[in-house]
Length: 237
Image (cartoon, rainbow, N blue to C red; front, side, top):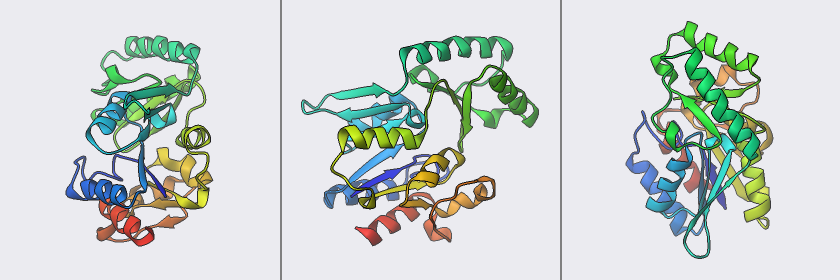
């Protein structure tokens, strides 16, 4: 089995890694299954995941980059958008910062390749609206997670990242043996198109805003974040 999972709010609790996360990693590894983190976090976070945990691959920047450990034990990264789009994003980021001088880019923005992130918790609603309108005017794509407004150029989504990863790196795996866990609007492409989709119980904060909902929604405090993922993984594997 492959367990794909969002990171923030799904494998964390209040922004922290807890013992449940480490138990998930250990349990999946012991069962000879695979955990693949699919996150809006940066490529640099992907390197952290692959060097500090027994993970073979991850999909970062909302589906913009695949990272995996090759047969030599080296980390390989595959951007899923063109160099032209990467350059257009870099130019827009400069323009955005010029237009909004105090915009709080995320601390990990220096480690990003195919997207950038804004720490919207430090912004008021009016500024958030102004920034998103500016992105609309410039034909820049964006989405809102639990912690960031991520923005990018080109076709990027978690679902596209996962399907391209599966086609190239795990072609023998059947969809019925793959699961996805999430809790936020930037997981919606997976909820729409991935049959075995599971929302941990804290998805209730945004479920009313989702056009496409996970097929299974966990309930109760015992299924918040990583606790819910751990319980569900143990029930199916």
